[in-house]
Amino acid sequence: MLELTLGTWDHDRVMAIHDGRVAVPGVSLKCEVHPTSKLFPWAVQDARFDITEMSVSSYILQLSRGGSDYTAIPAFVSRAFRHSGFFARAGSGIESPADFAGRRIGVPEYQMTAALWMRGILADEFGVGCDQIHWSTGALDEGVRRERLELALPPDMVVEPIAEGDTLQDLLLRGEIDGLLAPKPPKAFLDEHPNLVRLIPDFELAEQAYHRKTGFFPIMHLIGIRNTIADEHPDLVRALYDGFVHARDIAMERLRAVWLGNANRLSLPWLNASMERTLATLGPDYWSYGFAANRAEIDAICRYSVQQHLAAARVTPEALFHPSVLGT
Image 1 (spheres, helix red, strand yellow):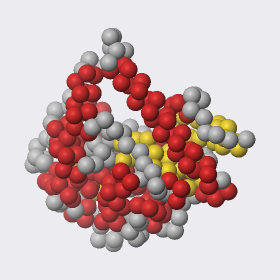
Image 2: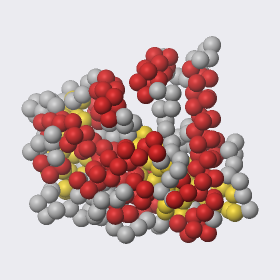
Image 3: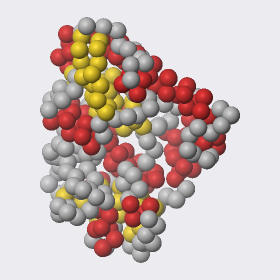
Image 4: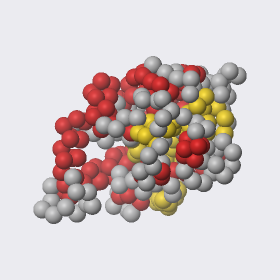
C-alpha cells in the first residue's frame, strides 16, 4: 500500500476523499484540510504534500519558468465567476471597470488566479490592459499579504506592495487608491460603508451573459501530484483523477437531494431559485472536470498569463497535465 499525503481546503467536492467514502486503489491517504492561503505558498515553496490543491495561475507561472514539483489532473476543485469583485471609491469618477485605465487599483496578489481572471475580463470585456493601471498589492481588509512567487514584470509597469500594517480597503477609503479587484467582498462593503461601491451591482446577470458568450465558468484551482510519484506510479494519476470525479459526483448528488428534499436543510432561503437559475444557465454538468471539455478555458488562462507579464512564455494547455489524463 502506497502511503501519500493530501492537502486541500474543505470544498464539498473533495470531502468524500478526506473522510474515506472514496478510496484510491492501492493508496493510503493521510488527508489534511487547510485554507488556500497556506496551501498555495506550501505548494510553490516547499511542495509539502504529495497531492495538493494548487493555484492555476501560480502553477502556469512555474511551468513557464522551467517547471513545478507537480503535474496536474483536470479536477477543478474551485471555480468562481468574478464580475462581483470590481469595487471603487464613491466620488472617484469610476462608474465602470472601463474607468480603471490610468488609475491606482488594489489587488491582494498580482499573480493570484482571481486577479488573472479579472484582468482578463478587464481586457476582453472592457478594453483595459494591465499595463494601463498602477497596481498596489497587499492584504484586502486585514492581516498581511505578499506575492507567493517573485514577479518579473516589464520595467515600465508599476506593481507596488503597500506598507505593512495597511490594507487595500483602508487605502481606498482614504483616497490613496481608486479601486479594487477583490476575490471576496471587503469588510467595509459588507458593513455598508457608503464610500465603497460595487461597480457591477447586477453581477449575476453579467456573469450569466459572460458564460453565454464565452462558455467559461472560471477555473481557479486544480489538483497536483508530485512528479516523482507520478513518474514511479503512472497508473496512479488516472486512478486519482477518477477518485476526485467520484467525490465531486457524491457532493453534487447530495446538493441535489438537499435541493429537492421536503425540508430545506441548507441555510439558504432561495436555494430553489438559485439551483434552477444555475441549471438553466450552465446546464447539468456545470462543475465540469476533464481536459477536453475545458481545454478552451485553460487556453484562455494561459493566454492571460502571458499577456499580463506573468508567464515567461506561452504554456500550452496540454503541458499542465499528466499524459494519462489528457484523454478525459
